Image 1: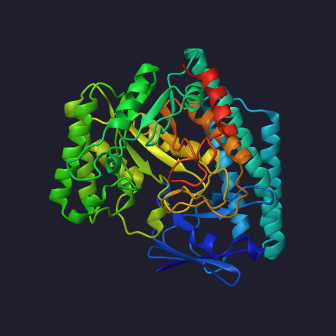
Image 2: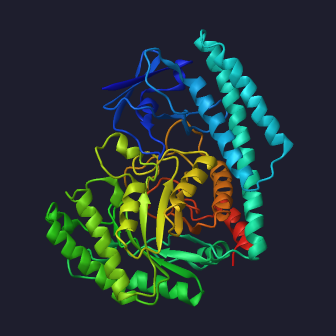
Image 3: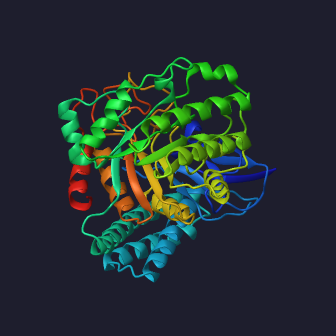
Length: 492
């Protein structure tokens, strides 16, 4: 049994809920199963291994939104670490390493950025030398961390501007798809007009639960009309996910066969074959499966789920060989593995699929930031950049699905277990800022072939509270206007 301990000053920086969300992970972001809790003035993490690792913990500087921050690699020791000091060390180390990496490939940085990094280091140095007084050290470390976060924002802005400039020198308009999920209804004329100003692609969900409410009885009307609408407006069409086991898309009758792999496989195969045959040649990308990496589904283990994914892609490729097939991974930082004993992280699951020789046309990462349950804690844009760069090593086109809350009130039309995480004053302004920063960052990445906003409207039933681009009255949020501007400037 391994144990790591961290002094928390002041103690109200963490509560019981946020402490439970802390975990230790390795270099590939994969968490080890662990138990995290507050004991007096310490964050205590117990785990089965005593290997060195990085602590991930939700943290907020005064005036800042809560984000998941990482320490540098730490070893176990008798004396507790001062948490704020280690978080400052981790962020400064991350910024300096990324700065060096990007400068080595030609990034030019401003003197203001160099000055900000220097100020963060100086403040951190004072914190390190005062650890005999944890309260004073924590205050100094928080100051250094705030400066380091500002340096991180400046670095991302610098990288995004220059990387986008390099891409535009090769092509005036980028070929990246920008889309949103059309949901399970039809757009009215005003919404459709606003949609077309912001997006050049669309996701038609083809929900199994909606299509086959009763076994063998299919209802296609809405999805037929959505795909026809996409074609009539020259909008690229993403069909799926055909299998979505992380949300509300599994038909109720399928649970009668829970744990029976052979029958589940037969039903999955029949549905996928039916859908792909019906819409063959009308879809530009098949999103075959989503959420299969989250552990046991329908009583099936990881090996069985891997076989389901392989079969789904094989059927789509056999019936519609001219249309690429992709797989979506939920919670790509794998926070859920803190509480589950699984062998495959999302990255390892994807790597296993790629190694089978499966003809994958894309890997999609779902970043529903700022939510508990089926979502993931909010992270800095620099962490998103690192995640995309890590996954790009698989040499498969990447697609990114995004969600971010604009409010934290009870949402009467939200279904599922996701809720905006406490610790942040969620607002439409914060959502707009996040949308602009993250979308520009992703557009700067050649490995990213498509960006999808996961939820179009809060006015209809949806998975993530207040995660839409239209509010509960059907009025557009400022984020939609930002996407319209970005589409006009950067995309075909």
